[in-house]
Length: 46
View 1: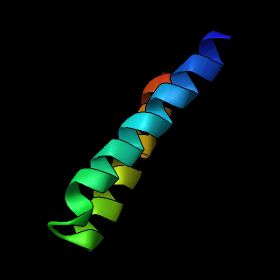
View 2: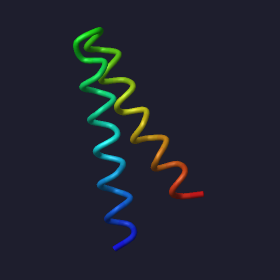
View 3: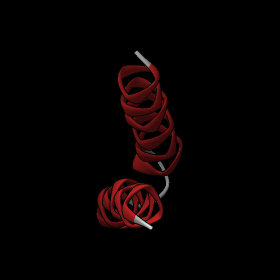
View 4: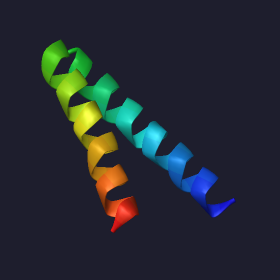
């Protein structure tokens, strides 16, 4: 259950970053959103 909660939190944070930056610079929003996901995956595997 803890892994599912962490996954949902990661997805929500990534989507929030994407939505925040989408109106300012769409490409940057995509890159930052994917960076959040990648960073969470790296931290999860440590």
